[in-house]
Length: 230
Image (cartoon, rainbow, N blue to C red; front, side, top):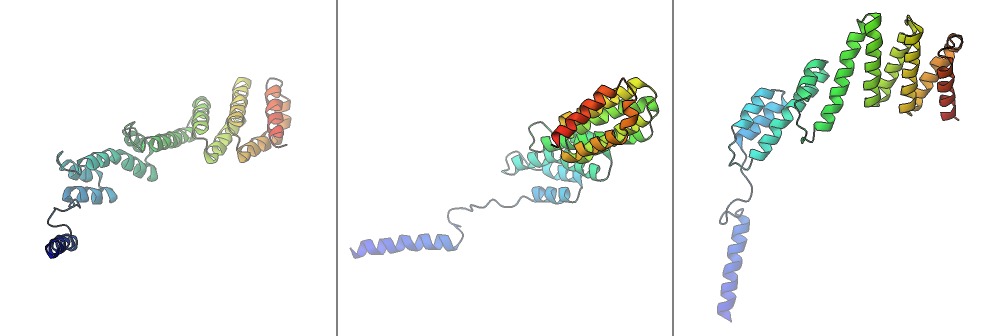
């Protein structure tokens, strides 16, 4: 009995010693830091994207850090794209964000920023466009703003439609732009968007009413907007 107690005490001592020494007898459980991986993370956080990729590529496939390194390399285009977007370099942003792979967790967000970048690129062209080009650009801008679906872009697109109508040189263009305004109203239910569209149509109602070709569309849109607010 005493012998069994001594054996038990001996094994308990081993277990306690192993615990207090960080399991040194059985090997480390915590993976040591990888210098290349840590250097890559630091470079990435500082916006040194090519240097970050160079560090991550130093990690061998046998390393437990290799999958993380691959993931971080795939994240570089997204980081670069966001940085370019913040600096208003929208064309560069589109190029970098388009490199984000489909399987990346950043893919959906990258597509959102691509849409925003394309919108601002078109706005720049719109501001310097001729009448014919402006008409085409308004359609493209409205399509993108409908896709983005955010109030800021939708309200801006309504302003561009108004600019197009005010400078329209033909009834056909005016009719197309009124229909375009109707599409914004139909596809988006944001109160601020509806209110702005309604205010615009009511302010210039006399002008629209006198044009028999667009009168039905204008009355229909106004009716839809008023029904929404009832």
